[in-house]
Length: 269
Length: 202
Image (cartoon, rainbow over all chains, first blue to last red; front, top):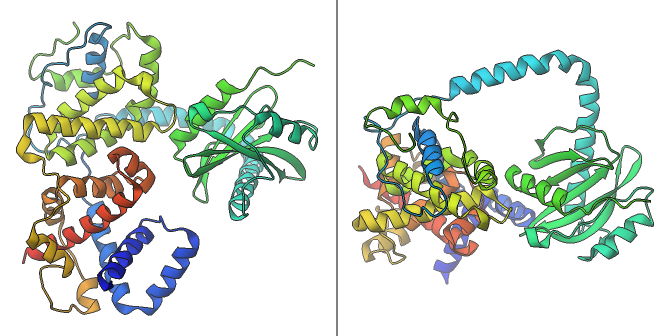
């Protein structure tokens, strides 16, 4: 019995350290941590172990590997299913640590920087405005996660969600069901951005909530992370979309693709 | 031209990446480029930790890239990173089983001694460590690396995925194909084992 309590402690401590405890349990654990010297000592040891592992030198991708893979793929035509022969190896042992691309990356970044810097000063004001928009949208997402449910109307039926928006808002977006792509429609809510009510469609992906807020078109909000949430934005003729989630940004990119592909063509009126 | 890579010349060919024309499967190739390529560096890192050396890691990543390309249709437009790393992880293990069967130590059953060690919080047996002693745990990089390499595969992989690749539990569960609860207990036990191994070196 004592062993299992101890085991549970260990699991909780690890989950806390990994940021995987739900907020109430995390708060409770922090309370215990403050009171329990031995728990605190074990937690500190866990932290120093983590530091030690994370500060291990990172293995760098060997230069040339990507090119070899590219050419192996080019050779891998349809019907050819044989695996490639042994990889041609670098003539050096140990860890190749050259960063052959960092120069290219640097050069690309420099060019990119030069191109955008001229317009930066002009747009910086508008940019700030848009970052406020992003922050408000993220705040809406966070608020929704704190509520008992992240939506005002719960439905996985787009024919329910869409009319619900239509009856409340001057402009309502298409509400595609993306369950086949892994994003299950769970409902919709009205967020207020600036002083305007806007439609937010809510999807679930595994345990993660994705809020898709729809704004009047023509706004550019940069993809970014705010308060630990990834923000991804794109536009079409009718709306500027802002997707917010704790999913990795690559998943949000998939979401954008799925949504853009899944949005039925705008109805002509 | 393709596939013609004389020994020793690959250092040079590495510099002209992207100059190879894409001749076929353009769409699948584009998806592959978008899905798998961004995670190559991570893939390599994971492969190196799983196989234990740079040469094998290269083989594994190249093999995994081919598998990913051939299976790109099965990519469900969900989590490109987890999908890619899953393939790398599985490729690494099949590669190990084939090429160095002895290197794959997969067991949830630790030896009695290890079990004992774990349950008594390290090799110091019943000695009670003071909080200061525990907190002052430190080790240099080589020790940590050696200890990590010594861990049984299922503990090593979760620690690498968590600390090196910095994935969350959900993704680790997906990649290693076990429930989240198992990820949690393996992480916890793996870390305890590491601490025990590092404590052992004196």
